[in-house]
Length: 139
Image (cartoon, rainbow, N blue to C red; front, top):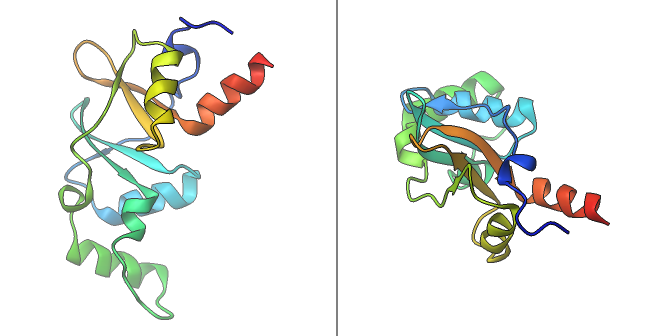
C-alpha cells in the first residue's frame, strides 16, 4: 500500500455545492436526489460550511402526512443554511495524502473531509466510502 498517495487519487471532484443564501430545501433535494450525504456550502468558490444529511435529520420536523412542497415551505420558513451548516470544519489540502485522510477519519468524528486548494477554494471531498474503496483496491 502506498503511504504517500495524494488525496486527489481518491477524492470526489464532481461535488455539488450550494451558496449560503440558498434555501434549506435546496440542500434537502440535493441530498435526496443525488444520493450524497454531505453538501459543502460556499461563498463564491470559498468553502464556508458543510451540511450533512444528519444535520437535516436533527431539525426534527414532525409533519404527519405532509407532501414535499409543504415540507419545503416549513423548512425554508423556519431555517436558513447559516442556521444549520457546520462552520468549524476539518479540511484537507489538495497536497495532503490518503494516509492523512485515513488518520483523521479513523478518529470517528467525521464521515467526510472537504479538500481545498491554496486559495481555500473547494476542489473535492473525501468520504469514508472513498477511503474504503481505495483500501479495497489495494487488496
